[in-house]
Length: 108
Image 1 (cartoon, helix red, strand yellow):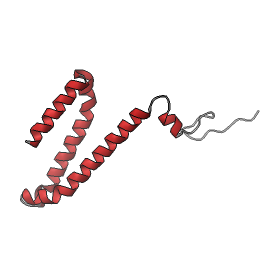
Image 2: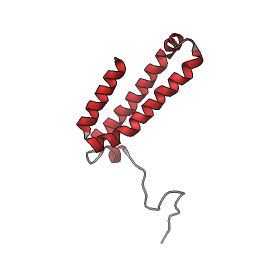
Image 3: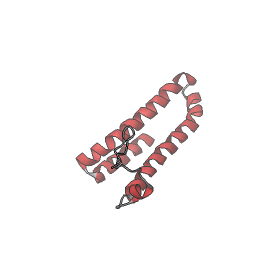
Image 4: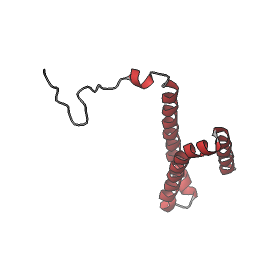
């Protein structure tokens, strides 16, 4: 009886994952939602990085450029980290309405 030697982090009977494992059993909508969230964050960061030179000139120079970028990224991380908790605590509809109101207030 031959015994398989396992590599670090593997068991002798483990198999590598495939797209069928990711997309199977009704996981496709969740996968699409996660991909959309990652794309939305990347697109939002790209837009912010594109407009930052003109914002830096409006702020009075590039001395505040780093602070504006750090503030934007901090807000993005806090919003992403707290959105799930808020949706679980107050319900998805209430959390979405609160996010829309906050967004509208920030744009005003």
